[in-house]
Length: 369
Image (cartoon, rainbow, N blue to C red; front, side, top):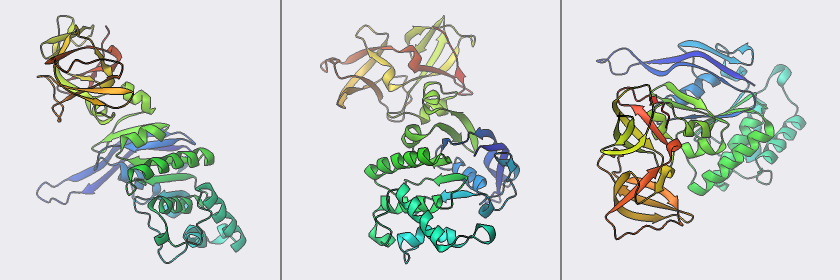
């Protein structure tokens, strides 16, 4: 099921009467979610991603704009008639019901032509349980299940109605690290098997990058960038997107363009060609964008090494660095040798891992080398 959002906007009354006006939670969203894809809404807390999900589900009514499921305008359609399956951060299971009855519950509310016989309901429940691999737990109560198992029950309950769209609102937030990894892989497997258009809300960029076909990076109710995860990582349109994606985070420096070169502080790190003219800029370098080079143009104060198996993280400092941590993290192959007795370390830079941003607008400045 293709989902199309056209100029979608949601405003809430400002609770601060002194400030007045409205709070814009979603601002003029205009994009298409392709049929059968897993799309991640990604951004920090308060960016509007859950509100967007609630608008798509019908739990919230938009202030402006339209929502289409395929060719059908569902903007005014009640949530129960949209054919969506919802999974929330809290499992919201009925503690007094077995897993079987929890999954069956949505089917018991069907009326008219959609009403199912007991045999049909039992068949659907067993199919949904098998899909999420909890068919041996149907007689247990929620209190007898692990967090990961409870989340699978919640997913099965959403799938049992055979929804046109599956909506997941931070479904992994209550799980520990190992279960998060396992469950996100399960979500991807289920989505691939069912081919249901799925929207996955998360603030965790690793989750979104690892399982989504497309990601939508949001900030303050606005879409910053939409695309395939690797494309967005490799080609951010502004400084916010560059900083939000990536672990360890991107290294951001004070810099400038001048005399046909790009400078980090006083270090001329490369020759570039750009139509922007000479100006002060932000220079951002991915951790994997450094090449250990004793004669390299970027000179940094050497700190320590962090061994990560196949890779080594060189921790250093530079006067022009703007990172909150105060440290540059440069990831190089563990075959490289670093002399810790030296006070400084030199780097060359991989040009495709270096991004330049306007200091005022924070928009990307394209350049050639």
